[in-house]
Length: 375
Image 1: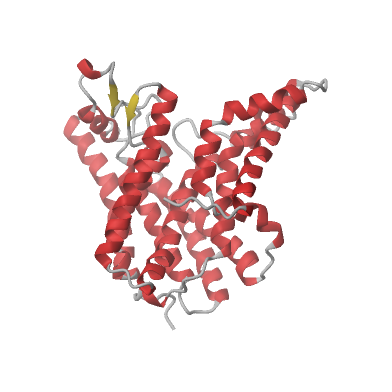
Image 2: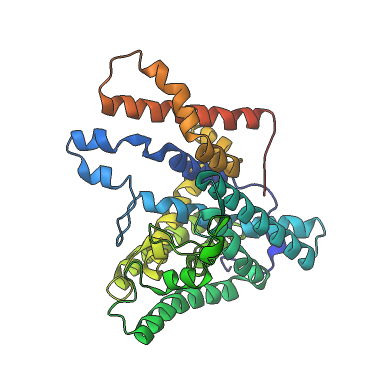
């Protein structure tokens, strides 16, 4: 029996507990801000571990760099289940497309409102994860009903076209490298789209990122969502659970090795979401998904995952709440911890841990009252 079915209506309409658990794990990791552990780890000569709690400066990939790919991958995993559920409820393809477009607009709007809040100016950019999902979601949706073969072909096309465009641009401009910060195709596109200086005091439209992130990442991150779609097709198929687990694991290991093998030709750069990064990070997301699926859905060991599921069922709320109110929550916690005479590194860690606990309690309150915000 094949590992997937091109007819999405054959997928089960129920929730996949491992999907919620992995999503919750991802959002808690994001909300934790690494628990401000870097200073404490370096104090104990664990610099290598502290390095994993921060983004790579340019090339390379750390554990912290895997948070956004996990979020986007899980968006893709959920898509076949969501599509099947609406199909079973009688929704037509055109009505689902309309729903997808509205969802994308809402995600982009939320992301832009968050940017505006932080920048204190009307701020329109597409480098935040919500805007990236908004741009990448529609291409994934357009092949969603066409089955795994077309989805895989679309994924391959994205992974080939993205670096090809970077290289062609670099050659046309006479650049030594297609991947240098500030002078690559992605940055150039943002520069082309930037608002004229005359309006800069009213609105910031497509400003060039100081951290060298680019909006053009939406093309390659569509590949990350598509890899999730393929995983979702597999998880919703009628093949044995053990086969699904093994295939996810093998695909993940293969992607990690392939991503590494590609780095001499296409450097692994998260800020440009290069093909080698997308493939390598995709490998880790597949392995983690397999692990959650094996423990939560095959072995049915779920009690430990409950705190994660609580967050996973309100992931957008956790993202927005923890981002906007991070400093406010810390200010609530800090006075209580100052009562104890703690070393600075321990104090910072405990503040981050307590703040994370408060964020989780907010999600738990929503869960108890059956408030689930979906976009």
